Length: 217
Image 1: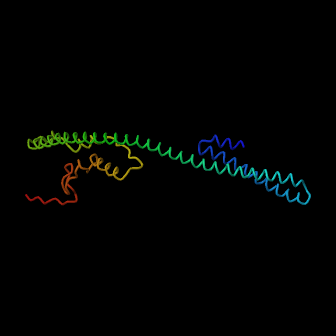
Image 2 (image 1 turned 180 degrees about the vertical axis):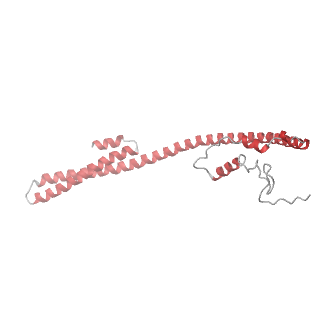
Image 3 (image 1 turned 135 degrees about the horizontal axis):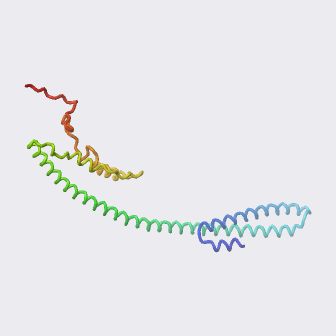
């Protein structure tokens, strides 16, 4: 049986499936042939045809059907084994891929750690400069030369007005929270840009929602 030889050469689940499909076609043809021979046998019993020849052909067809069914059954078992082996190989390959991703993840976290430490150092140095300028601004006010003062808020906001990275379509909850925390360093009203107290002057303009105390001369 040529297809049995093809089945012996098959290695993958797809190979087995292709050969089994052809065997099933042969099986259907053999079953149809058997039905024709059974009808011919009925006619031969009543003298229409060679009964011995028909029965011999029917026996050969039954044997062929049995052989094909046995071959299909064996092929099905081998296909299942091949599919299981391929699935196991896929899992092993996935394991290798995940190990590689884990190594990349570790490297990413090391970069995050380095950048956070760098950010902390920059914040410390920026704070020292901020305090020095604040002290100088107070001296300028006291000396009556306010035009020398530096607007710290304007300076900070201008420096932080650069484009921001696009947020991925999917982020885990911890990543979203961390991103919001990082953005709070850049956003007006964030941790580095506290809003003035209610009613306090903003850029020299007093709030219109808080009535000014009356001035008596």
